[in-house]
Length: 423
Image 1 (cartoon, rainbow, N blue to C red):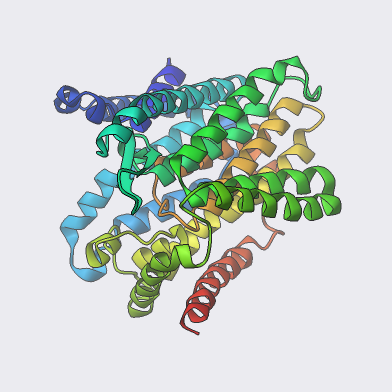
Image 2: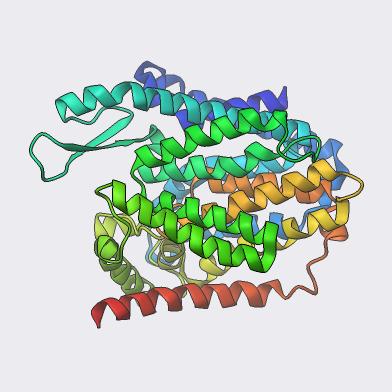
């Protein structure tokens, strides 16, 4: 029952039933399912003592949540802390229930099926509405229409509702699912069992194209590169450069929204303001969700958004969650590769999903969104099932130094990009 409630909660959150059927808004179905899932997850945690072995990631997520909740105290906005609680809690709940209820390959398969069905439902609605949007030139619930500068021609981009209401975010969601499609019970190569996965992949890549998302298109190249490097090592690195570059050239040749430095100049201008906000309050930040209030537009960079709003402390905690999760996920195959090969394959796939999600997040504001914390929760469940911090210790990895190094490195990269733009 707990798994069914959690999957229903995730699906409804992503589909946004309040946008689909406004008459459901007074009943708050997503909130009801979220509150229902908490005691079920708590009960599951009591029944699974191995979950107590997942300590570092769990503590980091809790500390990050607490820091975000208190981010308005330095600015005197106590009421905004309550708003932060209401807005961020659903995503943290997904992390908690994910850790407690998704720790087996069978349950992960059910989650994968749920995510695929959500994506297909949005794609079907988007493709169904595209002729209407093309004829009228007006946006529909699942299609964003914008003028191209040519008379009677419009740029049509498929999107979802609610948290997936931006085409870029829907494209990122499709990419996140792709590595999960190829996890099977048996490691038998591309056999007949992979035919549905290949067909769904083709459909999702078509969907990425129709989102018109430049970040998602670069994400496809990045995902392909990660696969080639993992499969062929040095030769894969050479292949990913050639294939990835060719893929981006092909995209630029067939669409009006080209991938180029000049195409992102408006984004760099926003980053410049974000760096100014961070410099103005480097320790505390400007407060949760204050960036769009000051700039009237979000940061278009998850890393800069976190640093600007939560300061270096919040940014370090957020980056630490990422670093610890990637380190431990990467070692799961070494720990359980022989005893539980299916779980090991899930660890590899989820790590790829998280990696491509984080890559595309460099161009999108996804610091606090549900899919990221779902990936953290799924990762935590896999790590716990593999033995947690006892089987995959972190004390010799130097993760705090890596986390701070990545914080400084990302901010330095953004600063250099801004300086190059000004040169």
